[in-house]
Amino acid sequence: MIIEMFLAALIGGAIGVAELVARYRDKPVAALLSPGGLLFALVNTGASVVALIAVTAAGWRFGLPYTMPPTALLVVHVIAAGLGSAAVLRMSFAPAQTSTPGTGPIALLNGILRIADGELERKRALSRLSHNDLADLSFERDHAALAELCCHLLREFDLAEAQRLGGLAAELSARDDLTDADKLDCWGLELTRLVGERALRQAARRLRDRPQEERRPAEDERLASVAAEPDPPAEPASVPPPRPPLGKTSRLAPHANGRSERKSFSDV
Image (cartoon, rainbow, N blue to C red; front, side, top):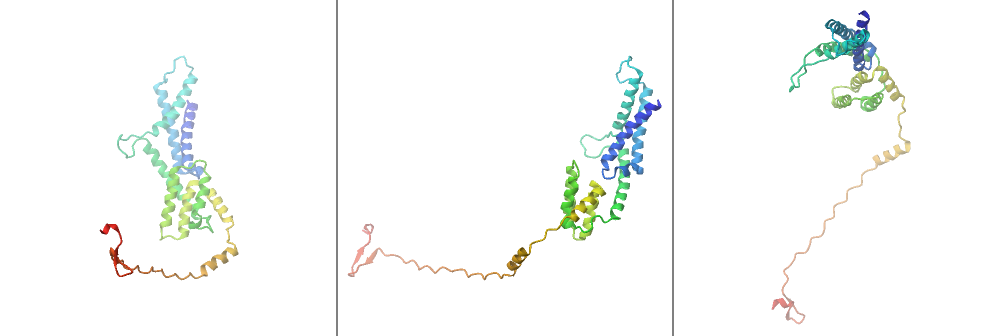
């Protein structure tokens, strides 16, 4: 029975560890060794052992025939206890037509994850602020290139993460009460949460070592001459000459001999 309990605990613990690693991709080892991470793994392993004891005590055979060897039945019990306990712990109950989060065993895991989140956030902020990995960089000039480098390091990038980064960049750019260094620190903390400190450090080093493009002297002289050249005076708008007034034409035009003659047959 001890071996079966160990195997069931191993399955439940592996599921908990995999969830922690997927959640804290930048520092998975620190997340596992934190008090919140250890408590999360302990709850998953304990639930698997309790589920195995309950299944064995109830004598459930899961539809297997009685001719099945006892070893095969124990294997089924171990797998059912490990996977079933993980499924039960992540169950949530909520009304069907409401958007409020549900309650249930998932609330216990969410509370433990919030504890781990707080611990990891404090460690990450302390480690980030104790090193100046983004020296000689500027938020206004380098935040887009830095984000592109960090995002392309990931094989799969979540759309929600991209939207959150875009919203943060727009918010920091619109803030006038923060200096460029403050904005760069906030941006670095967000990228550290995404890719980790080592990847951010390497991306910043690549941007720092990249040579800055300098304009050629000829182009500088041309731009300076264009800027120094005064604008030509505006020519006065030409006013068209006034049109002569239209006089009323008479149907009878004077003749050269002093007589008047008709101009058309319609005057008859």
